Length: 111
Length: 115
Image (cartoon, rainbow over all chains, first blue to last red; front, top):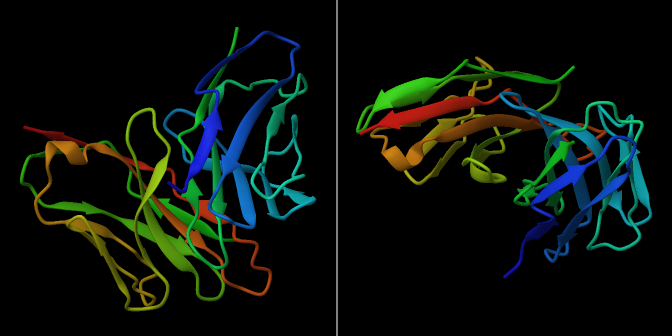
């Protein structure tokens, strides 16, 4: 089955730690996206990548970093510079001028 | 800039009631429009879409018509079920010259359907 996988489903981080969220897709899509969702709010774009080895900042990139070394993978690192990282993180991908497909999400909690 | 505005929730309905969730947008050019649904603890699923004026998207009994004159894309369903309880997001994709594939989302509307 084609789709997007995210891991882990739940992640706990201590203050000052960096953590990396995984996102993999087997849909052969060129573009991939990371969103942050806070309770009762819409989605805010963190980073996006339209092609391998290239990515751009979204609306709330501060305190986050990404890489795009392979077409299938777009990991997100939440750094210690992100002051309020507790949120639900969603990865998405799209091909051409079509809709985005979303993964199941990772819930990050700072202890 | 581009934006999407949805009616505030929660929307609480009895089973078999008629549903309308309002969505209006501001955008340059001719955006594609989407409705996504999110069940508790899950990612977003595409519910329906429309890519040009007067298009009607439909899926699972839900419908929405792209109205360029009123810049709206309201979601409707004739008879809701308890299983429709979820958060619904309206979104647009700017198809202009700087197309990056980014989606702009509304804040979401929570639907609660009671038996």
